[in-house]
Length: 255
Length: 365
Ligand SMILES: Nc1ncnc2c1ncn2[C@@H]1O[C@H](COP(=O)(O)OP(=O)(O)OP(=O)(O)O)[C@@H](O)[C@H]1O
Ligand SMILES: [Mg+2]
Image (tube, rainbow over all chains, first blue to last red; front, side, top):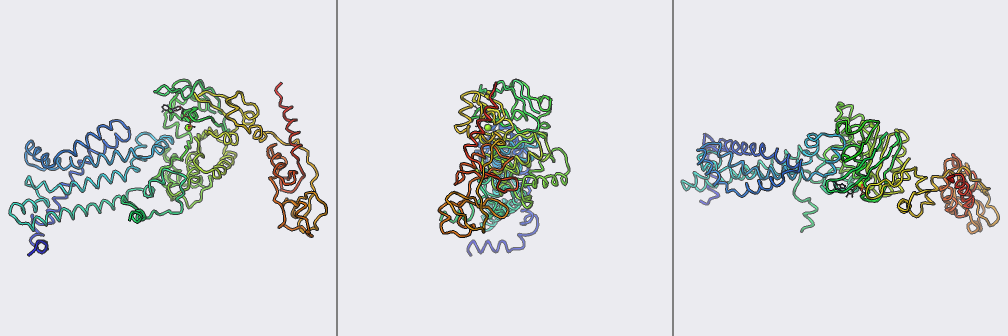
C-alpha cells in the first residue's frame, strides 16, 4: 500500500477525529498556541513599529531587532527557554512570538514610513494633532503593509507551532513527533498535511479580513496616488481588489 | 488681515529662507507671493499656519500673534491647499472635504451636508462624493483640495502652488473659478506661485521675493508691470511686461470709429474694403474681404473669414482693445456692447494714443 492510500485511510479512520488526540482538539491546540504567539507579537511589535514609523526616530532599532530575531534558530531558542523556565506554555509561546515579531515590526514600520509625506503634511496642515495624524491618516494608509506583515507572521508561526510538541505540548506537531517516534509515517504525513492546510486556511481568512478593512481607495494601483494628473476616473472599480500579486495584464505581458 | 513683522526663518543647517520680512496682507483680498525657486515663498506661507515656526519676528493673524494660539487650533481656522492636493487616499471625496468640520466636532450628518454643498460650490458633480481621490483627474483633485480648505468657512486661505501640477488649460479654468469664488466669498487669500502670469492674473497685490528670502517689491500687479523697482524684478516680470501691463490700464478713453457692416441674408455689398458680417441682432459673425465677395450675391455664413478677439466696451482693458485690433483680419478691432452687438471699430493707433494719454496721467510728479 503506498503512502497516499495510507494517508487516505488515516484520515478516514474515525478514531483519528475524536477524543483528546483527535484532529479537532489538535486543531484547537495548534490555533491556541499560534494565536497567543501572534497576539504577543502584535502587542510588542505594533506599538514599536508605529511609533518609530511615525516619529522617524530609532529606525536602527527596527532593523537591528528584526534582523537579530530572524537570525535566531527557533528550536535552539525553545530549548534554551525551557531550560531556563522549565516546561510550560510560556516558553513555547515566547519562542513562537519571536518568530512573529520581525515581519510584524517590518510591516508596521514600512507601512507608516511609506505613507506619502504630502498626505501626512496635509493631515497636519488641516489641524490634526499628532495622535490623529497617526491613527486617522497614517495607520489606515499603512494597513495593507501591516496586514501583509501579519499574514507572513501567521504563516510562519503556524508552520512552526509544531515544535510545541517537542516539549510535550499538543497541536498538529504531536502527529509528527509521535509518528517519528513510533515510525508511523502515514501519521507523520497527516500531521504535516494538516499544518499546511491550516496555514493556507488562515492565509485565506486573513486575505478576506484585509479586503474588508483596507479602504477601497487604497486598492487602485499605488502609482495613481502619486500623480494627481493621472486620470483614472474612467476605471472606478479596480480590476484586482486587495491584491499584492501582479495584475492579470502584467502577468500576461511576462509570458 | 495678516501681518509679518520682521520675520526671519533660519533652518538648522544655516539656510536663511526668509530674511526680515515686513508685509501686510489685506483682508478679503488675494495676495500672491511670487519669485524664483528657493526664494522662500513656501516657507513664508507655511509660517502663517505654523507648519514652520519663525526663528525671529512676529506674525499676526487678525491682530493675534500666532505663537500665542495652539498650533492645531490655529490650523483648523485657516484653510490650506497644497500643490498635489494632498488628499487622504483612504477617504472618499465627501469625507476628505468634511475633515476639518469633523475635527471641529460637528456631527457626521452636518459635516457631510456641508461637504456636499462645497462640492457644488467648487464645481464637482455630486456623483463623485463616494469616489476616492485616486479615481479623480488632477483638476478634480485640486477642486477637492480647495473644497476641503473651505469646508469650515475659514476667513483665511493659504494656497501653495495649487494649480501647478495640472495642464495649462485646466489651470486656466481653475484660476478663473478661483476668481469667481473669491468674488462671492471674499476670503483673505495668500497664494504662492512661481508663475508671474498667474500672479498678475490672480493677485490684488503681488509680493516678489528674491532668493535669500528678501522682499523685492510689493505692489498691485499693474504697478509691478509698469514700474519694476529694480533689474531683478524687471527680469522676473519678463520681457513682454509692457504688453501685459496693458491689461491693467483702463480703456475707457478709446474713441470708437465707424464700422461698415452687412447682415446675413442681405445682398453682398459692392466695393473692395473689408466688411463685417453681423446676424439679426448685430452680433459679429465674421468678415468679408474682396476675395470672398467675388461672385457672391447674398451674404451667407459659409464664406466668412473668422474674426479676431472682441473688445467689450466698458469692461475692457487696453490689452484686450489692442488685441482686438491686432487680431482682426481687416485691421479694425470690433468693439461690442454688453449684449454682444457691434458698437464700433477700434484701431491699434487709437489704442496707442490712449496708452500715451494714460502714461501722461500716471507720470509720477
Ligand atoms: N527644512 C529645511 N531645511 C533646510 N533648508 C530648507 C528647508 N526647507 C526649505 N529650505 C531652504 O529654504 C529656501 C526656501 O525654500 P522654500 O521652500 O520656501 O522655497 P520656494 O520659494 O517655495 O521654492 P519653490 O518655488 O521651489 O517651491 C530654499 O533654499 C530651501 O532649500
Ligand atoms: Mg515652494
